[in-house]
Amino acid sequence: MAGTVAAGVWSLQTPLDHRVFGVPYDDAELLGKAVTRGPASRPIGLTMHLANGALFGVAYTRAARRLPGPGWARGAAAGMLEHLATWPLTTLVDRHHPARDELPSLAGVRPFLQSAWRHALFGAVLGALEARWNGGDAEEPANADVHVNGYVSTNGHGNIHHAFSGETG
Image 1 (tube, helix red, strand yellow):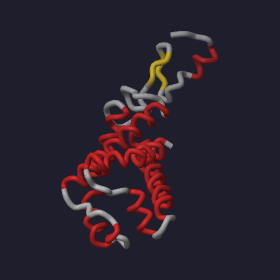
Image 2 (tube, one colour; image 1 turned 60 degrees about the vertical axis):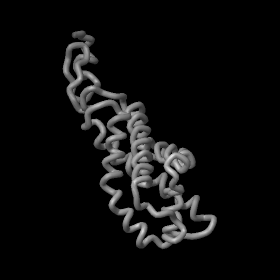
Image 3 (cartoon, one colour; image 1 turned 45 degrees about the vertical axis):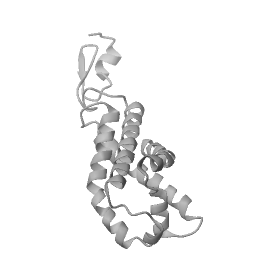
């Protein structure tokens, strides 16, 4: 869910970053026009973009607790890692996308920086939401020992013997 919301924030801010970076690149348009043309390309592309956010969110959630720092920073770092890993593929978009004549070129510094901004924003939103919805910004990984009333539990819920015996730490 956090990945879908973060992808939605990315899409909602896109008109703003068009003005800031001067590049009319739109992920929903890029994705939608890869599979269809006409008025359906935008909603199909947006659906694909949100689904990609959800998939990234699932992968991120599985790794997040192993990363140091607050959720927003972990997420932003993950978003930037994805940006840097996939950016070289944009040369394929400029050469082979079925609608390459209808899309702006992704070559150059401004499209790179625009995409970096989008990935950092996406990641920060994803990380903040994931941390909030899945247990906060823990100092330790989620599977670390948790001390409950002086007793140690590996599952974070206390010791079942002490829960039923009424003993306190």
